[in-house]
Length: 609
View (cartoon, rainbow, N blue to C red):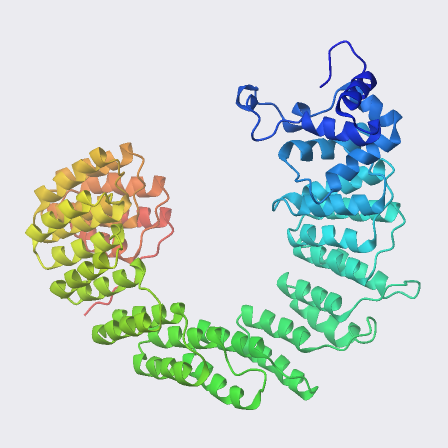
């Protein structure tokens, strides 16, 4: 639409006259927008990729026309702000460039607000773009929007912890003489606390509560500071703030949330007794503990192994705290803790209580129960739980099938494990690397290496790539069965499979080679391990030292001891035990003492009879 050599205004007039458009001001913005490439533009793919702002910047003549004709600029902004106009990447780039690069601000606060809403609706990163557009528009002279518009932009920046942009936007707000309200300050305090600037949040709160302030903090803002102090580890300062300043300085009595913050902070450092004292004070002040109060104590007690105390606390408090009857978190925490401590029957009772009295269990709870029962060897109960899960409308996923397959493999009930593998496939689920590795481990333990070969074939046919754990399982299984040559063959095949052996696999081979008195090959493997930059650990050195002791090869042992010192590998009790049983008997006590002194170990006192 713009002819070379003609002025921008003449082009606009000629377009208007040909189309019968009534005025230049109403037509030009649409023409300008038409020049921007759209997704359907036939030549878009042929254009070289350039930064968005440079690609869609209007020409100098068009910008001059926009500056010289305020009504034209206003019409362009109105077109961009219209609900019928979708912001494409190109029109967004144009919009963002107008105030920031060309000092062309939106003409009114309503249009500016509408544009900000459209920018915010685009994608997660839009708050940053919207805040930048607002700051640039204000700097270019745009009329400022209302306080609520600033709050709408400040809130996502605060949630993201984007303190620099939040501060910049607030400064622009003050410069535009827009008065912040209690919501604004609440957002700022929250952002400061999230960024670890609790001291600045405290100072802002004190400023709000000052005698010359026309905005008073609400209880949510005050509690945000309490929470910030607790989360930053300043627990005692938070206690002092709640006891001495919250009511007298900031005008709000501590509520349930305030005390929950304090109690939770004590729970996180393992001081459950102090948390209970805080809750006692909450009750004495006539406040009702809620389900969060209940759960924090239950979780804290379970975390330190006091499962029965947690269960007793739950059963006692749910009868006297009307707002704390327990929820999915309460039950799942207790059930998981009971299962991990092998209190399976009590866990089952609690599960059925939840099911019958409170609410139907969710999929996560069924999963926890199935896993716990399988790990406890209660496989029949685990299968029943899986059936109940299906009856409740939840489909078993690969993890659930893997739990049951793993349980049967641990109990050496391989036929039933394979039955569940068949059910898994019938349900339309593909066995994964964990499924096959579990079955391979079970077959290795049973000594059924024909089944191992068959499983490996199925695994490859299913397009399931063996992992380093799979190879480790096979190598350990063959070594344990005395088939070290086969284990070494599998080890050598790892390179072809693109899987790098790790320290665990080297340790398995070195240990079994030393046990079979093939120490020379174990040492070669150790050297190869070093060449491949796989780190040796104390288990590696212990296996070699035991092998060298059995073959009475002290010189090589001294080399290993030097390597341990050089690689800063700290000996453990087994290392010292092997050396104490060997070196003094061959007259090398001094070498042993020097080694232990260099690595900072003390020889255990040996009792003589």
